Image 1 (cartoon, rainbow, N blue to C red):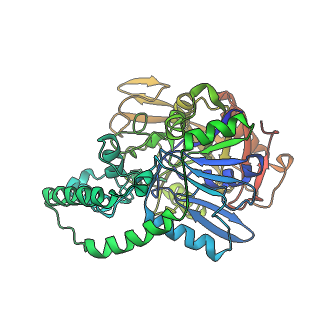
Image 2 (cartoon, rainbow, N blue to C red):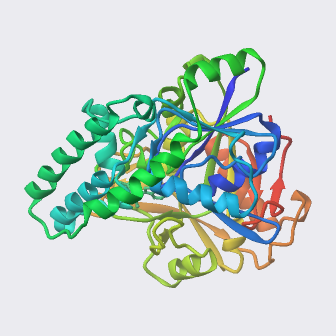
Length: 427
Ligand code: IMP
């Protein structure tokens, strides 16, 4: 059976966790394939909010198996914190959570290195979540990393020490003011490692192969967004993994011809947290309203998100890079009350009008060209059927579908599982 993918098409925070949770009843296995605790996937049901960082968003469903794939980087301390929260809610994760032996481990010194690297950049900061993501992926590609499977080896602590010592000399090289007590950090780390070791480690590519053979349905859950992809994002203001569809192949060991549907998740407007170019960013009251009504604060860092109009140039690019087959529009409810809405359809770039995403999208290079739409005043949050959606919103959606040439199958009208409108039958 083919593996379906669910990906964010913007700069992250699109609402992927909610949709995975909504779709989980259609799948046997939910698998994370990249990223790590930089992600914050928010799920709301039965009046309660849950935030997951590394654990797949299917964990609240009794029948789903949740796999942390080889492409993910795991911070044992944060992972343990997530498990503790699940325990408090009597979620029996022991039988439903599997971890790839090939996933890499974030060491305390990776986090320190992240902080040192950012501090050394001054104004050119990436705006990293400082979870050690970049340094851990650097060690992975530099062939120095420690993997989950290494924890089963007798000499892993020696390898740990060697790597941590090397990191300490690198931190000193940055010559920035970073205070830390490694002993304390290590105490917490090794306790968390013991918890991690009590979970089930697997050879995940073999597991997925056998699951496919046994006709099990699999949904691969992306983290961050396509515009943060290490190759296709707004480099260097990106994360350190492939957040796009190809990342699911390398992050799980799924062959490209085994990919089925690709669900592309986007917000009805755009947000970005951290530094980097954002052509449709708003600095006026409209942007502030989006931030306030949309509660646009990072689920991992609490930082306010930058807000702006929907950018169709960037969205088209993301749809193409990922081969999106169905779109899901999030936070439609946040746009209620705007008199007019704008959608960027082209850029003015070096004196020309262009429709594709160019190499440089800094403010001095691109100026968005907008199409305007009438807004609507209706509160969408209580709506449950597509027939209830206001005419102006339908016009907005119809325009996007026509431009993107992909159906918008779900419109989300609030954070709760129940606030999900299916415009068409899925799959
Ligand atoms: P890092 O992945 O923590 O190194 O952060 C690199 C960039 O990606 C920063 O601009 C972060 O704000 C952004 N980023 C990383 N993870 C997420 C996410 O899950 N949602 C939104 N932005 C993210």
